[in-house]
Amino acid sequence: MSSCGPKMRMDPVLHRDKKPSWIKVRLPSNPVFWSTKSLITDLKLVTVCEEAQCPNRWECWSQGTATFMIAGEKCTRACGFCAVKTARPDALEADEPQRVAEATQRLNLRHVVITAVARDDLRDGGAEHFKQTIEAVRAANPSIIIEVLVPDFNDRDWALQMVMDARPHIFNHNIETVERLTPLVRSRAQYQRSLSVLKKAKAMVDGKIATKSGIMLGLGERRDEILRAMDDLREHDVTVLTLGQYLRPTPKHLPVVEYIEPATFDEYREIALQKGFRHVASGPLVRSSYHAADFRPELDVIEAIEADVRATKGLEVGPEHLRLPKLKSGLVRDLS
Image 1 (cartoon, rainbow, N blue to C red):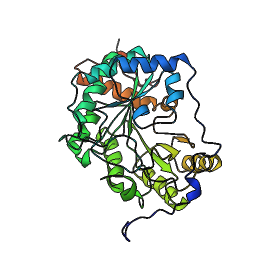
Image 2: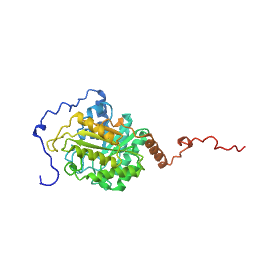
Image 3: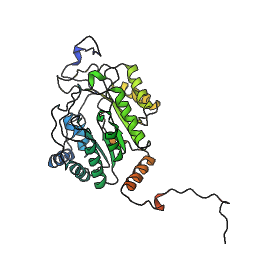
Image 4: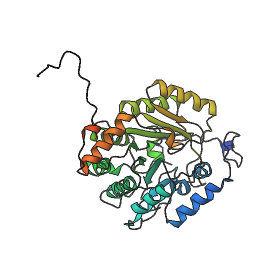
C-alpha cells in the first residue's frame, strides 16, 4: 500500500474463526423461511439478503420479509466491504418489476425494501428500472410502504429525479463509513457526494419523504469521526440512521479492525437520538434493512405522497380528501 491515504491498524488476534460472543446468528427453523426462499426462487428474484451474506437473513425470511435487489446480481463497483460480485452486468429484465410486485403481494408485505447493484454501465444508473419497480409494487399493493436503497447514480440529478418522481416513502443511501475511510472502503464513491444525494432527494419532493443512511463500524474509524458523520447526516436532513458491525465476507475483503461491543452501540444510539434523528437502529448485527418495517414515515409524508400519486394518475381529489378548517363562530352571516 502506498504511503498516502487512509490506513488501517489491524490486530491479528481479531482474525480468528471464533467471533465475540455477541455475534450470534440463529439458523433457520421456522417453515416460513423455507417458503420465502421457495417463492424468491420461483419468481427468479435476487435478494441482497443472500448476495451480501446478510447475517439476519434467517430471521427476516422467517418473518416472511426480504429486501429485493433489482437490476441483476453483478455490480460495476468493487467496494472493499461488499460480498456482491463485481463483473460486467447482464441486460435488465423487463419483467422484473412485475415479479417483484408479485412477490410483495404473495408475501403480504406491509413494507418493502428495493435496492440494486451499482449500474455505472447504464446512462441513468438504473434509475428508470427503480421507477418502474416502485410503480409496479404500488399498483399491486396500494397501501404498502416503499423504501428504496439506492446507489449514487454518479450524482446525475435527472436520474435521481426519476426515482423521486415515483414517490417512494423512504429514500435510503448509505454513506457506509466515515469520511477519512471512504476512499479505502467505497469503490468510486465520495463521502460528500453521498451527502449531497441525500439532501437533493429530499428537496426534490419538498421534504415529503423520510431519508435514511447507514454506517458500518469496526473498520478503524474513531469516535469523533462517527459523531462527525452523524452531524453531517443531520445537516443534510437525514432523519433515520442505522449503525452495525462490519463483518468480513471473505479473506479478500477488508479486515475487521475492531469488534464493537453492544453497550457502545447502545451509547451511539442515544447520542444519535439526542442529535435529532427520528429513528435509530444500532447493534452488532444491524444492517440497512434490518427491521425496516419498525419505522413508518410521518402521516403528512404518506398523505402528500398519496396525493401526488393521485394527481399524476389524473385522479380527481374530492372534498373527502381535503382537511378543511373549521369556521369560527360569528364569521358566518345570515343571508336569509
